[in-house]
Length: 276
Ligand code: FE
Ligand code: FE
Ligand code: ZN
Image (cartoon, rainbow, N blue to C red; front, side, top):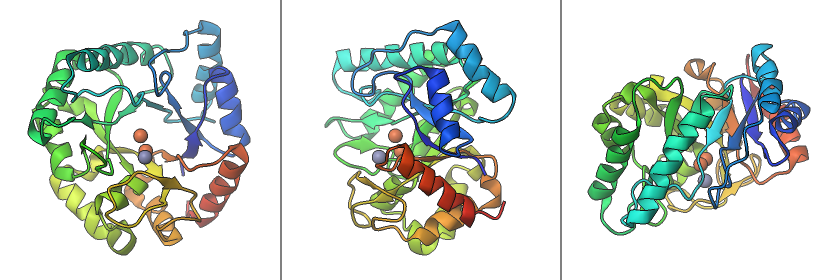
């Protein structure tokens, strides 16, 4: 099983790798830049090589980069849109220098223009920037649907994928908290939800999975992560999802409210529930 958590790169990529290994992870997720701003860490070749060694010797695999929350490719505000496009373009370029080929972003919030217009803007941005030569997969995260968020239904994700010229570069990152809050009943009917996803988009498009419990009820359209053993999602869901054969090579990332110690315990617990 490939499992890890979100890890800070504030003290550099080698320290992040060390932290990941110290909690029993074999992957991790990091923000490409300040999640609430946009400032990026400078790329130091020595640091990168140290991280690359871990990926080459296989103790860390399928690293996942997460775009900042300030990147909104669906905004009605022209300067926000421009900023988002600039970040997308730069992040793709920066990631080509890192041993990381999975990049997840929140599709965006339409900020009042309506879902269709928001989706058009996301598609336009991706078409303006993707060249088809990218070595990384760019993943749309499934969202809870809070505010004017796009991407809380499989239909919306499919509309984005269908509109993008180089859609083979796109994939999806499931988030268990978001799915449940969006009204997909993964607790009582995981198989049904995945069948629906498979028919609409295809299970092969799922390249990463965020494992989070939720502080809020089913279909709440809120986005409040909880620890794996707490919250409204039954622990059985996590056992079920990590044992699905087609997710064998998919990285599972914890974004639960924990410090490293808490992540260590959750990873240990999840590994004990895994058949592989
Ligand atoms: Fe996210
Ligand atoms: Fe997430
Ligand atoms: Zn969330």
